[in-house]
Each structure stands twice: as structure tokens, then as C-alpha cells.
Image (tube, rainbow over all chains, first blue to last red; front, side):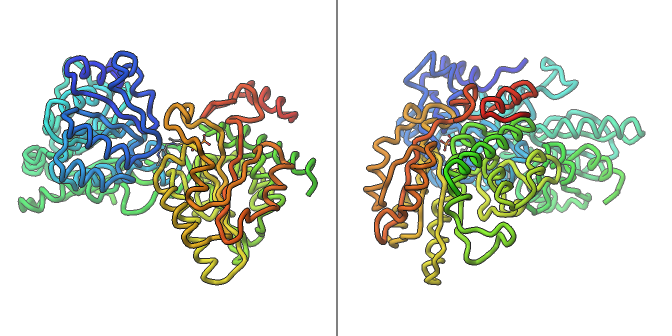
Length: 305
Length: 267
Ligand SMILES: Cc1ncc(C[n+]2csc(CCOP(=O)(O)OP(=O)(O)O)c2C)c(N)n1
């Protein structure tokens, strides 16, 4: 079982006295830290712009703050603060989308859809951007970004683990995509927890005699361009799958690599197709309606539109 | 409408919130705390037409604390914007009701909110538009107290008094909790003085006393040529003892019955 955010930040704080946490009405995430090192856990209220500025200031003073808010708001409300104070400022601040990645808060409406989080963060020079699939990758991400000097963003995932992926057999290196299934009919690239749907599609396709490679891209920046290019050389179709707009996230990033390298391989980008997901319904309903599902992957691999 | 009828509307708004909370994840705390205010607004003060939600002469109501849309949905249904039976479709596939106020799905809602700190700037804009037209429409923005920690509110507060928006009203649901206790997380007091310092005419009310609320609304605007701020002292989760201070609460069949019974309603 993976450790949750609260326990990992406590572990990092015990190892390094510079690590601290700042919450934007997410105090629960900092409870373990607050109990052990009360002076290193700070609540600043519902104020994302202030959150980032305060993080930048702490970094000026040599601290390593993890600043945490809700994914859509901590990436959008304070985008300029992140871009300028953390990016331009080259500050060692870790921005945490604590809860509400992607389309998770489906029926709560478009205000709560973080379908631009990866694209926005990827725009910023020097930013490391990670969309972990599950608790295992979140834990690894936190350790990895704490060890680099510079701004980073990740979308926190709770304790859930990807199915059929025993922790002891898994690997995690920042910036390196992971192959979760092998097959030659196509490559399905995923980012974030939707990797589980990529696996489900792969199993279905394998059973139908069309095994596909599943390349899980947890780090969107720096992107593992080499893994994308190998997939383009070795399989005849690439399908990207993300709970995100197809613009600027995984689909956009893969398209950029393929185009720059003159790869002629077809690419299908599954994700939100440049619309707002204006609808009421469950998380599964919203994903299904927007073609972000194992079924959509299977259809794409089978050449259906 | 007399006070006892208004109290009945408030009770039915609360019952609607509880039925929604038995269906889906629901921000019960901040929804129940505004039920009396919404009853007074929708059944005493706001000029709206349920048969013509887009009527140009309407008063505008912006629920800036958009997570409390269950209470607004219940008030709109009671007021006749859509059938009350629809309340229990909240969050169902293709319902016209959304988990946060959604102007694109729900009749009677003018502003899609849910990201805190958007309502007051929007209200300032609507009021400026109304002023350009020399029209009589009034604009009410309902704010959470925790929400006031967002800086955008204070930028808008400054602009509203600078532009002398006498038709603009901010109502602060001062329930003293956000996800935790507001004064512990980021203190707001002295809150009335802050609004006064930004040029607003301020009045306090007991946000659960319909007599006081109605009297305050009837006294608007509180100062000539100035925006008005009504700070409503409320209880988060008001009306159901075991929901008090909770931000969210998912009811099951038994707790729904118990909660409705506290309101004096059958399931
Ligand atoms: C910009 C933004 N940041 C964070 C949130 C998450 N959030 C939803 S409700 C809430 C607490 C709101 O507290 P308050 O304004 O006091 O509302 P109430 O107590 O009336 O529910 C928070 C932090 C949000 N919706 N929008």
C-alpha cells in the first residue's frame, strides 16, 4: 500500500529541515506534518495567488515548500504567479494539485474540471510536470521532485493502486515513461489514473488477437521523447488517452514530438475535444460521453472513428 | 408573503437540500445556512419571473459560493423555475441540476460559479451594465465567509464603491466555518470594518431571523450611492443538529428521515 501525501511530506521533512508545507484550505493534507513540526505547516486560507507568492518567498529564504490546493484552482487562479514567481524566478517550490485532477469532479461542473492542468504547467519553462497514475507513483514523484532544485507540479493521487501492477515489480524514474503492456498492433499512451483504462483496453485487445503496447507517461515535462519515438518506429498507430483537453497535454506533447521528427505514424488523441464538458453525471458518465475510456481506445485501435 | 409563510419556504428549501444530500455528495453546511436568506430573497425581495428567466427587468442573483447550489436549486424549484420533482435528479446523468451553479444547465441561474472569488467582480460588472442603461435592476451577490479570503473580492469591493454602485448588494453568509473554523484558518475579523473601509454601507442581521432579514432587505440601499453589505450571522448546517458545522454530509435513508424529522417534515 502506498503512503499518502501527508505521510510522504512528513518523511521528506524528517530527512530535510528545509521541507515545509503550505495549505490553501487543504489542512487535512498537512496534519501529520503539523503534528510533528508545527512551525513548518502553514495554513493561508482560500487564496491561491497568495499561496504561490508565499511559496516563492519561502524559497527565497532557502526553504523547499510544497504548496497545496485543489487542482483546477491551484493551476488556473494563480497561473501567472506560478509562471512568473516560480518559473521565471526559478524557485524551488513544489505545487501540488491535492485533489480534483482531470474530470474527477465530473458532475460538480466545469469550474471543477482540471482539464487544463497539465497543459498550463507544461507551458512554463523549467517546470517539471508529473501526472501520477496512482498512489505508488505519487509517492515516488514526491521523493523525486524534492531531490531536484526547481519548480514542479504534480496531481496527487490517493491510495488507489493500478490493477495487476505489484509494487515490487514497478519502476519509477522521473522523465521516463513506463511500458505496462507489450504488443505490436498499436501503442496506447496514457497519463494519470486513466492508465487503468488503457490497461483494460489492452487486455481486451490482446484477447481479440491485437496486443498493444501501453506506454504510461507519468512525466509530461520533461517528456520521454525517446520512448514516444520508439513507439512510432515500432508500432503502426499511436493513441493517447488522458482526462484532459487534447490541446497541450499528453496528446499535444506527443503530436509535437512526432511532427518535429517527421514521423508519419497516425496519431489519435483521446481526451476532451476542445469543448467544456457541460453535463451532469458521474465521473464514469462524463469520461464515457467524452470518449475517454477503454471502449474508445479499442475503437481507435480498430480504426473506428 | 407573511413571515410564517416565509418560514415555511425556508423549511422547504432545507428539506430540498436534505433530499439532494441523500442522493449525492452535497455541501450541506453552507446550503442550510443560507436557506432563510434565500427564502426572503426569492419570496419577498427579488423581482424575477420564473416563466421568463431571462427577463431584462429582473434582479440579478449571483451565488458566488456556488457549491451551495442545492439550496438555490430548491429555492428556484419552489419559486416555479422548474418542477420540484427534478431536485432529486441532482448529479444524475443529464440532469439540469449541477453540483455547482451552472447557468448553462439550470433555468434561473445567471452565473456559473463554484470557483470561489468570482461572484463579486461579476456582480460589479452587472451593476455597471445596469447603471449604463440607467435601469432599476438590483444585483445581489451571496458570498461565503471563507470565500472572502480570495483577494478578488477586495478588488471588486474597491471598484464597487469607487463606481458608486448603489444597486449592488453583497450578502455575506457568516457561518464561521469553511472546511475548518474560519477564524483559525485565516481570520476575517473585524469583518464589518473591512467592508466599511472599502466604502460600503454595512448592516448585520441574524441570518436565521426572517423578520430581521426582511427588515434589512426592505431598508436597502443602506447608504445613498454606496454599495450595501449585509453580514448575516448564521450557523453552518442550520436546522439539523447533526449536520451543524459539517462542510459536506452524505445522508443515508435513516439519517434522511431523522434530518427531515428535525425540520418537522415527513420523508
Ligand atoms: C478558488 C477555489 N478554491 C478552493 C475551492 C474549494 N472549496 C470549496 S468550498 C470551500 C470552503 C468555502 O468556505 P465558505 O466560503 O465559508 O463557504 P461555506 O462555509 O458557506 O460553505 C473550499 C475551500 C473552491 N471551490 N474554489
